[in-house]
Length: 206
Image 1 (cartoon, one colour):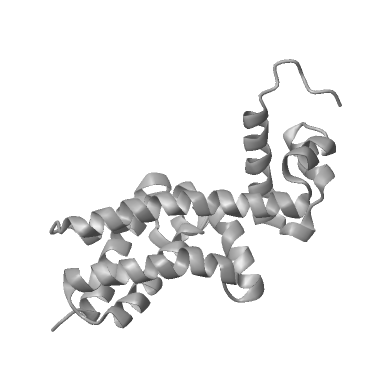
Image 2 (tube, helix red, strand yellow):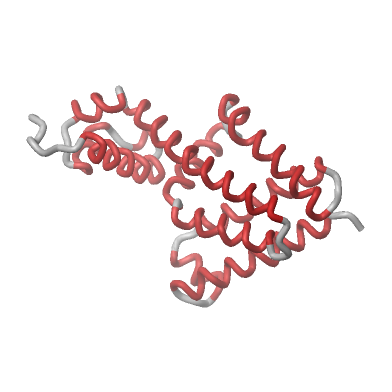
């Protein structure tokens, strides 16, 4: 299949990444083929191979794209934590929740990978999770008191709680809150602010 004269390689790559994230999150790597991916995007199999080398190369690129977005979020959250505002924890939770809901498919893809092997791979654990826990726990301990080791677990527990709610579809949000659409989303956001606040306070200095 010849490339259209006005084809935009960057836009095509982005469309393939979006489709890959959606299909991998739904069916897993082994649950879809390169041909299905190509048909979904409206490109040739050769185009996918050109941009990503293979289906597994595309899967890796989808994960890496999510980690790049997460790195941006981590920077924002750490900056918020370092500001020392009285409502800083609330702002962190609300920002993280809205990010997670807007990246739901990518989170499903990431969690599918984590569940399949029981955790992040060694490289991503060293490059992403551990630096965030180390920096975040130090800032959190300085903010509310308590030991950094405890705050590492609090930070991870709060993240796990937020991610689980963020993975829910519209029907689950309605079932949990009794509310449809945006009011249901806001009810969960408010609940997370309260729940994570309780978790942090319970491990802070007496």
